[in-house]
Image (cartoon, rainbow, N blue to C red):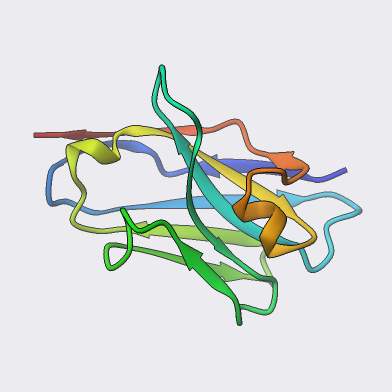
Amino acid sequence: QVQLVESGGGLVQAGGSLTLSCAASGRTFSRYAMGWFRQVPGKEREFVAAKSWSGDITAYADSVKGRFTISRDNTKNTAYLQMKSLKPEDTAVYYCAAAEFVRTVVDGTGSYWGQGTQVTVSS
């Protein structure tokens, strides 16, 4: 009963910035942890970042620490991923995820996923 819709993907040059949004809706969405994953063809889906409903727990993959920032606005049921200093290796389809607990978002077993949005970083 939870729907997630990503937006904000596009083409940017290396060193540039981009911000993704994930809008959540549904009757069962209540204090869910949210996060972001990415996937390149031929590779496994990779964890990027996650944040608890209260905002007191935040996790990042080592590859994006210091460059990406996850945030959320619970009044709008929306999560954001601010990406800075983008590199060609950041190119991927980015997916939004949600679950009752941060741990189940981080390990990829969350029950809800968005449709994905393409991010392409040129060299």
